[in-house]
Length: 85
Image 1 (cartoon, rainbow, N blue to C red):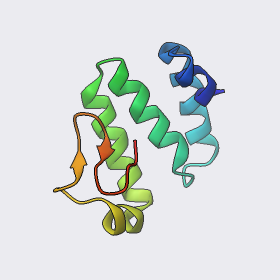
Image 2 (image 1 turned 135 degrees about the vertical axis):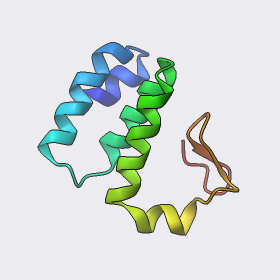
Image 3 (image 1 turned 90 degrees about the vertical axis):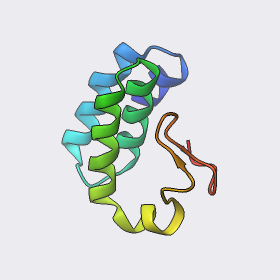
């Protein structure tokens, strides 16, 4: 449901769904990515950055392998090297 709300630009409705998904399975990275995107779209950049930090802590190999400080744009939460958004 969080994805559907994100793609419909209903960020306020997506956030609680994504938080529940994270609580349900804290090791699954995808809800963190979508939640960070929602926060960024809402202008809540500090919260988005905190979620990205949490994402990095649960999937550090993915980040090291694909994104680094040269390619990761923290303003848009996208990576120029791997086209991750």
